Image 1: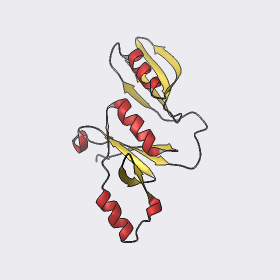
Image 2: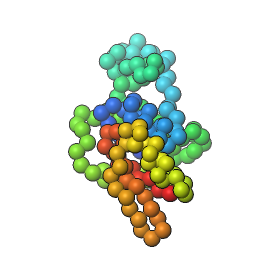
Image 3: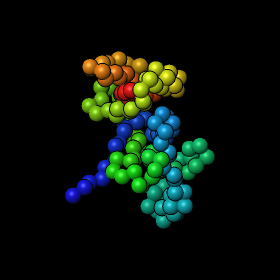
Length: 146
């Protein structure tokens, strides 16, 4: 039996962080279904406080997903959900994403992402494998691999 999954990232501002990650890894924001959201509020299943406007679009306030550009055809793991949590990040992640940026692209990608708010944390090497660990604007770690 094959299971599907999504990766969930806790955050203070899921919409801004989803914007950052979508641009960082070339994925798309999952489109908002504004008609559905309005219908849920009108039917009393949600309140206006459960929604917000982000970049001119009505969205659920508590989360935003990004999806692989190939959409549902990309298979399991083709969605990352950013959700609001009340507490800030305080310790090292126990799970992180490794992003393959291609041979010779480590420094360029590092420069691009740090210019958008990432922080370089560590450089590592094991045999021929090189990586740079960075943190996104909210402190979540990820590794850039060649």
